[in-house]
Each structure stands twice: as structure tokens, then as C-alpha cells.
Image (cartoon, rainbow, N blue to C red; front, side, top):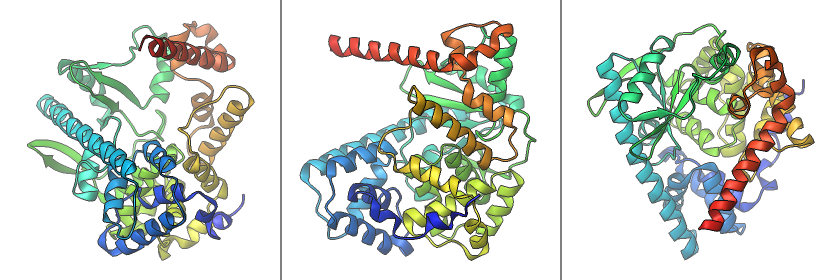
Length: 412
């Protein structure tokens, strides 16, 4: 196992385009103590000659519309093309409108849960934006995320149904083996609002946890917002949770790094306390990986208390995250040899990131998808066939999606 030191030395950012360097520089909003460094990074990227079309694509890819526009406006001495200004402002306004809709929907959900006696913890989203930046519209979110205790999960599903939310996929048709698989691997259920635009993920546990993981208490803080009671995490738990979430996705969006960068740059949390808490939940490698990436992306210094730990981190974890972070395209699984290779690398990555997670859970999560159950219904006796059929089912589903998109394009 190679040290992560090699991945953390040299002028790492110089190998990437000015547009990507500008994207990283504007993927967060630095506090006043770090504003000068952020402005310098923005100015250096702009001076190198930014392809503004590429930059706008990267802003969309990393979902930093409002953050990037705000950071650019704050930076002195830069010139942005008029069309780019219009494009970025339009995207920023759309992000803020979506955040306002999310806040209204979240308030209704929290009030309904409060009335039903269900304890709820909003994850990420507009409340995190409000906590980090004092502005609920800066962080772009595709949907709402709410965590409820496993014992309240069924009641929470019923409660959501009563206020206009419908699960995107049902489970009444699943066989016992399929139901058991979904329970073990699906940490959330996705919902869509029937009357208004909105999506919500109801979580029963965190992404990195499996159903056989020991349940570890999270130090929650009773909070209130707009008359709604909800559970919030302490800043230590929040940092661990953000690192676990980013690590689970191999940090393919820069905005996730920006969240943690803001916490550390403000000095809101002690790195040693975070590492201690991360160890208790098996997230120490995700946390150390995040710290290494913060140094690469934003030149944030590694806290002295954990410097030795970061330098001994398996470099594969950093390199895999760098590969995903710097990919100009959205993550997607390609058919053929390349797709199989990526799946194997994902399994290796998860094994090294979460050494406590069972190998069976990791293998099944990579080799089988609950979406396969919707494509073909196999009996429990033939459940094993989902593994060799995975590639065929994936291609079939995507061919159908491409055809529907082509038809809609022709009709339009």
C-alpha cells in the first residue's frame, strides 16, 4: 500500500485547464480570513485564459451555480464575458428559486413529522446552506434528504403519502429475497411530490452503513426553524457525515469538498475530535481522504494533529477521488470492458474506504442493482442470475431511455 504523500506533492493544479482551476476556486465561498487567497486563485485562473464555455459546463457538472457566481462577483480585477455573466446569473437565480421551493416543501414535511411524533434530521440541502453560509440559496441541491430512525421509517413513509409524496418505486411485487436485498442495500427510498415539483429521499441510515452494521449514536441537537422542530448534528458529527457522504461518491462533485473547506477555514471544528468520532463509526479513512483533497484543491493546511495520519493514507483512495473529481463528465457506467473495470475499481475503493463493511455487502452492491428487479422478475431460486445479467439489463434499460428521448426530441 503506497503512501498518499506522492499524490499531495508538486503543483497538482497546474496540469488542469484554467476553467477547471477556476471551478475549484469558486466551488465554495471562503470566510473573510481566507477571502484573499480565494480571490488570488480566481485571478490566477482567469489570467491563464479561461474557456468560459468549459467553465459554465463545469459549474453545471459540479452544481455550484450560486456559489460560483457569488465568488466571482466578490473577486476584484477580473473580466467576464457578457454572455457568460448572463448565463451564470440565470443559473444562480434558478438555484435560489429551487432552494426556496425546497424550503417550503421541507417545512411541510417537518411539520407533518412533528405532528406524527416522528423525529427527523434534515441532511444537507438548504438548511446546511443556511448553517454554512447564512444563505439558504447558495448550495445547489437536486432533492431533499431527511433521516428518520429505522423504527419510524414505515410511519414516515405513510406520513409522506398523506401530504402528497409518492414513492418512485414500489416494493409490494418483490420476492422475499429481493426485499431482503433492498433492505440491506437501499439506505433510502426516493419520493416525488404529486402536486408540485419536488423530490425527496427518506433515509433510514447513512449510505456507508449496511443493515448488519452496529448502530452508533449520533449526538443530535434539538433545533427549530420556522416553528418546526428537527434534529441537527453537532459540528463534529456534521463534518464526519459530510466526509462519509463525499467519500461514498468518491468526491465527484467539488461542492462537497467546499462544504468541509468552509467548516475548516472558519476554524469551527477540531480535527482531532473529528478523527476520533470518525474512527468510532468507521469513517476515519473518508475523513483523512477529505483532508488530503482539501490540501490539493484549496491549499488548506493539514491540521498538525492529524498530519501524520494523512501522510500514511492509502494513495489509491486519494487517486480514485481525484480521478472522479476531475472527470469533465457526470459519473456513468459504461458497458463493456471499461464498465467492468470501473465496477471492480469501485469495489476495491469501497473495501479500502470502509474496511469494517462486509465484503459480501460490497460485492452485492456492485454486482446487483435494485433497478434490475424492475427490468426482470426472477424467482428467489434464480436470484443469482442477476449478477451475470447485470450488464445486459443495464444496456437494455439505457437503450429504452435513449429511444424515449429520441422520440420526444422528434415530437418537439
